[in-house]
Length: 390
Ligand SMILES: NC(=O)c1ccc[n+]([C@@H]2O[C@H](COP(=O)([O-])OP(=O)(O)OC[C@H]3O[C@@H](n4cnc5c(N)ncnc54)[C@H](O)[C@@H]3O)[C@@H](O)[C@H]2O)c1
Ligand SMILES: [Zn+2]
Image (cartoon, rainbow, N blue to C red; front, side, top):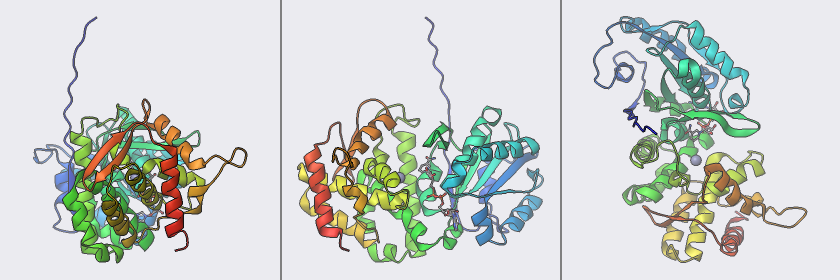
């Protein structure tokens, strides 16, 4: 046997800005240039893919993109006009979309020194990220997430994928983006319910990683509930930083192990989303999933009752409901609680040993490898009794 080591270096860069294509804003220039920041020696080609809903809500966007590239033509060239694609989850269910992005990459003559830049929600970024990672075995990909959830969580990570065999993200890869640019101006056009989504992942990552950040949000429940732009921006920025810090320094960027601390509250959520036929959004499902795991942790003596109540009050305070009827769904044949099957699904999803992250105090996570069904069901019954009528 001969054994050699391969060591790769990646810089993961997130830029925060407002009005990225505006005259005088240099963020995108810095993002497209390499880590050192030197101007590119020769002009590089760029393909831009824009989510249709974003282009529609930001009427000037396509013109601003063309104008930006006209100004920066010495370094970066828009080789074909921006490709506008429908986004949202359905875009990940339609394989021809992948081929359409490949065709655009091909027509734009994108090579491994040029760029594919995607502007849209997490679903569109997953689609374009996957096409970019597989074209020419991976071309440079720059992401501009346009939802609170993708700016704070999904869009800043190192994964991409589309749905296949009816399974979410079955086809995909790990690929570190060349850069991520979070432009807060995009968030202004989001409907309130979608704008609220990102807050729950911020609370989640604070609970497992950063007590001070949790206290900060607890002190700003009113502003968060009102979806105040300044409060939201600060929370998204901190959430993105914590998510990426975990990915980059947690020792398992490409998820080879069985633990997935960023998936706190997600085993229930992953079950509730299909059970409700996706009527329940990811964020609302995660809020309920976290509530189950918080009361569970209290039931088994890992979390104090006072902390559990305070955390639940913050989650409700920012506008998330803690109950959905499907949480109590029973199998029509054997009467078993359907949600409990989420544990085995979650184990399969991660592979290896079941690993569930629980919170023992704000900012402190603890992993367990078994959960006690009666204590889970007691948590669910309590949520029903206290919150079902709201
Ligand atoms: N790659 C990862 O690591 C990772 C992590 C978490 C989640 N995800 C994926 O991200 C996706 C969810 O992303 P999402 O929450 O951004 O949802 P989304 O992409 O489905 O967008 C939600 C809705 O908002 C619309 N929209 C997007 N930007 C808008 C804007 N600026 N103004 C108005 N409307 C806008 C979209 O058209 C869509 O209808 C899922 O497919 C999930 O699997 C990926
Ligand atoms: Zn999530």
